[in-house]
Amino acid sequence: MTHLDAYNRSISYLRISVTDRCNLRCVYCMPPEGVPWRPHEEILRYEEIETVVRAAAELGISKVRLTGGEPLVRLGIVDLVRMLACIPGIDDLAMTTNGVLLSRYAPALAQAGLQRVNVSLDTLRPERFQHITRLGRLDDVLAGIEAARQAGLEPVKINTVVVRGMNDDEVVDLARKTMEAGWNVRFIELMPVGNGVLADEECQDNVVTAAEIRQKIEAALGALEPAKVSAGNGPSRYYRLPGAKGTLGFITPISEHFCYRCNRLRLTADGQLRPCLLSDQEIDLRTPLRQGAGVSQIKTLLLKGIESKPLQHHLDECWMPGNRVMSEIGG
Ligand code: SAM
Image (cartoon, rainbow, N blue to C red; front, top):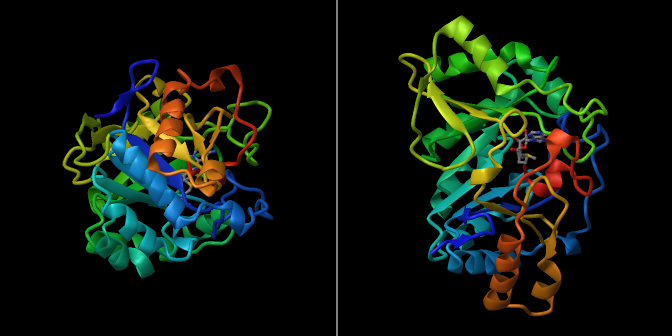
């Protein structure tokens, strides 16, 4: 049975950042030189993550997503998937990745029990891809998406952060992919988190709202129809272009927040439980884990996190979390 927080929200979903390291340096996420990596001993070990997930499952949390940093750069990630996939009560195990290493890992991940992947991709243009990610090659990600589909890690969802002047002229091309290639594309409004390069003093200058994106797509490709998706119960609203196999989704943390139906807890790579992405409040799980805490003690701490989950974020008042960059929390 799931637990309700103080605002009657049923908490069923745990997002775990398995590493703070990333093989890309996306311009809106990190400065060009990257951020200092945490020393290995600060990062939760796989056995410690397993204990947290067992505790979460006993509290009715049934969905787990592995993220990062970039989860596929952590050594032995397939082993972690295998460990978590057999925990009773976890019936949805997914990963968010930049896709660069996905073609190498997709078959092994699927075999280990991963059910699906979300791939972050902000552009379809090779040169722009290099500019945005500073280190990556578009072809690697496209091969990763295809490999994931072939391995049955479906539905593959493509997550696109839309930033004014960076890629807002590509939303129609990306939407077309739902018709031409059956992609499921979700557009995400930029969040001013962690003093990222684009989180400027004007607060929301770079944000392109879902309404604006939708208008551009409808003007070019026709009216969107509401659609259902077969997996996941996240914050996205889904639509379909007439005749398209794939769907289009909009995630609107800025223009229309969805805090009232937030069902998530987050675990940072260094073992801090974050009841809300956009609040600095954290509960230390690593210290008790290293002092020998087992499933029942971790359950007590998770319950504390559920009970203290804030009602909503305060980005509209220009308040933003300051203690972490996005790559440490996992998005
Ligand atoms: N490396 C993995 C990836 O690229 O998917 C997982 C971690 S990454 C931090 C997770 C997601 O957060 C990505 O889709 C990324 O585009 C998104 N993201 C990073 N900074 C963001 C921001 N300021 N606002 C909105 N989304 C952001």
